[in-house]
Length: 441
Image (cartoon, rainbow, N blue to C red; front, side, top):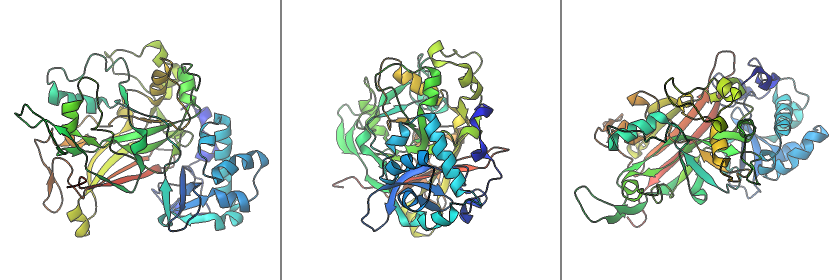
């Protein structure tokens, strides 16, 4: 981003009076300050919005009650205290920056508000999370060109990318009701599958269950009247990012997706991480964006000088797997892949601008998936479909197990962080879920 987007809340030397926030490589230093909806585990209390700081959560309900705040900030803390994050999502960028500045000031070392807020901290280990807001609509894009190319080669070796891919962000509407927050379990889906060399499908549990490594984009104010967003409006209009796992039943998908695309293969579960890392926190990690030389350049409604200057975001993404056998033996999760969001073919602003370009009305709290974020190397695949070459090459795991696709009891863990010279490292936390047997199995 341009230097004007940076302020003293990004200063890498800033420390917090919360000691755990100052630990090297902590996901949640005072430069981050992501937001989530939570409550204390085992206590019947209303959901409220909290701020991650080190290994603690600042309870904004208690903070609003027990700590003095400037009047213009206090009015925004009250809805957050009541668990309403949509109000801040729908606010202007100036409001979001003001709230961030106030929280940064209160949590940094030497703050006059520190003694009040010490009693408003809750260990993250003692809380449970809800979805950050009501998600009205969910759209999944396909911005990972390396994923699209690798998967395309499995089905169309001579023509892996269809002609429209480099001209328009490809996406489909997903199922908002099956989005769940990190930490859940879900059942292996059932569906119609066409076995190899068969002419009649069968209805049975998915055999080729997969994950997809994605980011989720929460929409800010949106365009409720359907007026298309300019690129600048689109850039100003996203609130923040989470990790997103778009679980996929590859065998069900292969039979059903033509001609209208994913349906039952994608609608049974989607997992997101609990903490929304705000657009403002990501400002130090913006990078120039351009399509490769020789590729079609974006049409005017998907292009702007600001997008070319700093449309990309440098986020490192990782996938880990822990099987049931590894868990029982006390073994740590095994990393399957590592990739970067800088390899995405379209930027966040382009996704929002395109989504609205035909008159679609995006609303505060809508969620957009980026599509699977794979890297250019074979070992950087963001799904098992890629890493196992369509199930042909088993992946060897510690302890002697192998996988081509997921087994019951497998836990998939997504992690992400931003690290850059001259900036404090920040993280997105974790996105975790475990596969359970199909119902009735």
